[in-house]
Length: 361
Image 1: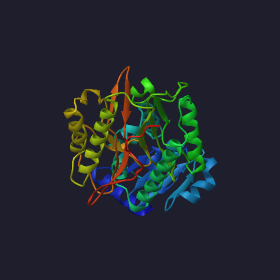
Image 2 (image 1 turned 180 degrees about the horizontal axis):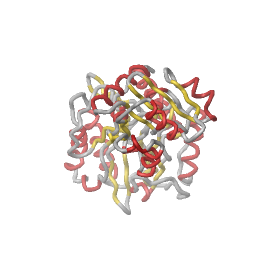
Image 3 (image 1 turned 120 degrees about the vertical axis):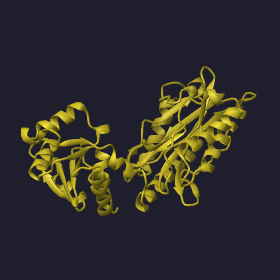
């Protein structure tokens, strides 16, 4: 990981925003800029200087992980110590990320300063680092490709395990146990297993409901590998499908593949969304597609860009996005198909290339 380059880019973004430096407390941003993975951290970036404040639990860890960064083991809350350093260093305007700073946290930051500099010191500059994180470097892409491959292997294993009568929580637990054995640090989010009529719930968390003898089972899951998330969804059918059900599946698959096909640098997020939505519109299923087509993914499961109707953000080479159209018919069934896709110079590379064709178990 080229932390020096990341810091230079962040410092340049701060300068362009009109501030002397930036204070970061959002842990994924801290990790991105210096490599520190602890749960208590405040990072101050002023030009070429980076200072990490944490507590005594992380004395050894911070010195190992915080590459090219001065480490201060604070005897008070890390944010308060960082704010005092900011004043001592002579900053007049320090940027902060309002998206991840509560009103209470901002008040704490201000109270850590003396009265003479408190007013006007902290300036909301937006999510500068989150914006930089949207475009992945080669090291990040390698980690995400590996995480995607683990996800594919987990799904392949589930195909030999799924059977009617298993509970959704049994399925989720088995998948998550296999993920740990495969080297995952954890799951990217709470695993979704939704079966039968419950498959019509886009975020149907696993319950004690039993997999049906006839009906859909949707598996939406991801793993964290070397700090980076994967995300994929596959839907299979238990037993022989009723007339018309496979047609709906085929339409969702066509929509998903149509959106993947238009991914390229220079294409807007809204255009990707429309590629999927237009297929479902032709099939008269668009009214059952109740969420956006996708989102960025990386150190966090939900990052920019957002792929939704009328979104004008332009895709860039190195972004990793999800494409996940679905159809949800309350009281009947639902299904979703999702891949994680890398934006390359020549188009989109699917990082979760497991089978998407119709499967009956």
